[in-house]
Length: 139
Image (tube, rainbow, N blue to C red; front, side):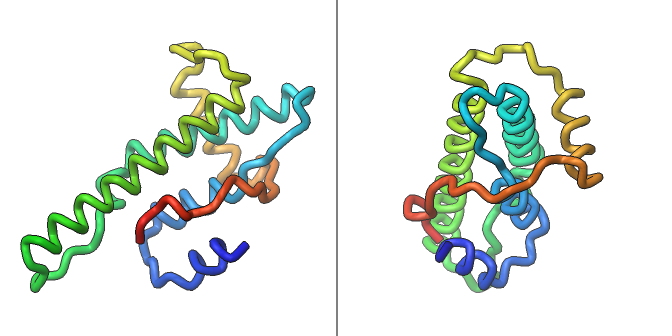
């Protein structure tokens, strides 16, 4: 997609950003009847949310020494809005992949962590899914 081409062209050196991008692009969409497939997608989206929450401070915008106070505040505000927009979309994907069920505390952190390990080892199912566009995210 055009969005993916633009993302690849950005001079982003932030490893957390690139890892989130990779995980999101790797999400799969399954037929409604494929419970096992949706379970994998659910764990994948939970892992993405966990990574976003745990590494959020590493996603802050880059500030230059010569940035004025207004630019500093603007960068901070836009960065925070973008992270919250991304978090909201990930939560929406979690709700979709869970079949709309309230997960509460049924999914343990160790389950998410084991799924992240599975992905890192390359055993996770991967295919690109068109999850929308970046029109609502300011850059």
